Length: 312
Ligand SMILES: Cc1cc2nc3c(=O)[nH]c(=O)nc-3n(C[C@H](O)[C@H](O)[C@H](O)COP(=O)(O)OP(=O)(O)OC[C@H]3O[C@@H](n4cnc5c(N)ncnc54)[C@H](O)[C@@H]3O)c2cc1C
Ligand code: FES
Image 1 (cartoon, rainbow, N blue to C red):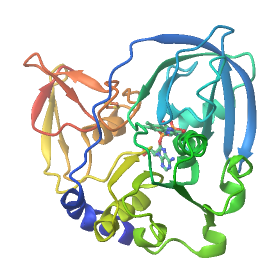
Image 2 (cartoon, rainbow, N blue to C red):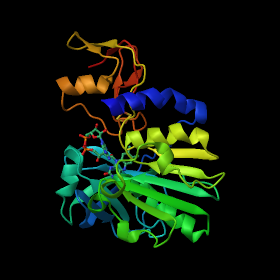
Image 3 (cartoon, rainbow, N blue to C red):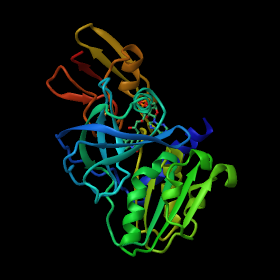
Image 4 (cartoon, protein in one colour):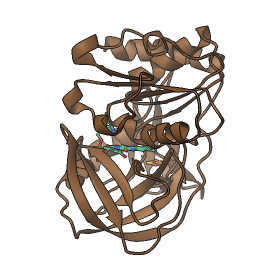
């Protein structure tokens, strides 16, 4: 709870630093039928999968992800963490958390899945210097960025945090370089602040950050005191709701009225009553959760707020 309070407390300050918001995501309406070629353990509770179909796959850039449609119908996003030059297959890595990731861990080679994309909500741009900050499974979009920075001869550093070395995937794939700081909690303690992760930030650096919500919040909050040029970040889980007001939803078909508390989303509340309610990104960009409203519009129930009548 204290973490949550801290997260919420610094949230307002973030926009004062850069005002940056998640860039709009271009929709890619393209279904790719892919076979699971390999699935292998990469760390505690993390597996990587190679996915291909024998034909050249659409190209992608560091920071891109695919929507993976699983045999059960669940759809989730996974960052591409292989080599963008290898058009014969995609590689993703998945930490086991809930239903979809558990299903992925149980897949076997030869299983057919559908991928949509790739699309990029976390574009890697600029010539450097770069500071990459990754937490746990958040290394997946960062790994191809580091490789690109190395290949381009850019000035870069990487801080990679995690609970323990055993829980941190791809340690063996990182450059053997003084600019890499592997920082498991078991050796350094839980980071006390974003500032700790920003130590040694090169002047004018662009920061690329992906990891748990408190890490992203801390890094963004403490960047104001540095000479950083910009911060780019990607969340794998929804951000906390800040200063949310309660509202009511009327479900037109049943006539039920439900109240959404200020600290919950409409999706949270509907999921509790209807566990099959579809969702995917929980951040408002994929459209999976959109529900028609009685006035002919639609509501992305994972992020949109306000009293309305849903065509449910
Ligand atoms: C752009 C994008 C890229 C992503 N890339 C990856 C990736 O490369 N590897 C990967 O394992 N996951 C990635 N995710 C998260 C992934 O899409 C799923 O949310 C995750 O696998 C959990 O789905 P689930 O059905 O297993 O659990 P759910 O039951 O859907 O989720 C349970 C709860 O865990 C939260 N959650 C999701 N991810 C995390 C996390 N990493 N740490 C803590 N809580 C989390 C969810 O928001 C939810 O509240 C990405 C998400 C996005 C939006
Ligand atoms: S779940 Fe993606 S927009 Fe709501």
